[in-house]
Length: 250
Image (cartoon, one colour):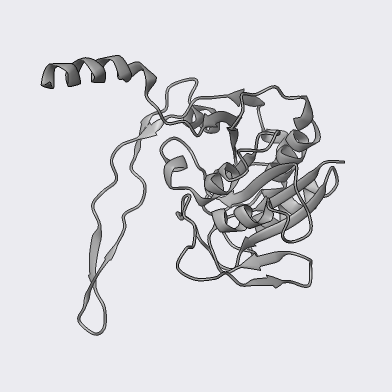
């Protein structure tokens, strides 16, 4: 039986984390290490300005006063007693589609398991008010059960988004590419009771690319979307153009 480290960015008390742990515990040995509070949008940040504190809860889950990446960074080291074979992150309350993966703490937690032999999995439920965690949990458990049969390039992460519908309403699974969004609106200013101006970061931009084959399109059609994403952000097709431009500058 493989060993799975489970984390998230919604915090140790999130219902998606509990649903994911319950489902995966039926097909693997698990350890759960998650932030002590909601850390959505934390991306790949590490806590470097202070030591981290760990707390073990009555259900065996471990929480850290840090980021999702902190949790997996420490978990994969085996410092809490288990050296995992695989990292699974989620179930996030809200989709992580297209440009969302840049900011997502859910995806970042999975990315921190990128050096393992099995590709890490980020699981998100495509609703900000989820009702069907069980659907996403079933999908995740199915993937984990057969993950050792997959043949992926090293350091690949599987970004999984699941429609927020009953399992019987899922139309299937599509392998997708990332779509993209328009630029988000500007920050929103607000004055607090003491007269100080504060700023709220605006929500995600509108969908700009939902063509067939994208993760956005799959979710709209009630398909599970699985997008293989990579850590190497090099734009190889632009290297020759960049080199030519630099030669002209010299």
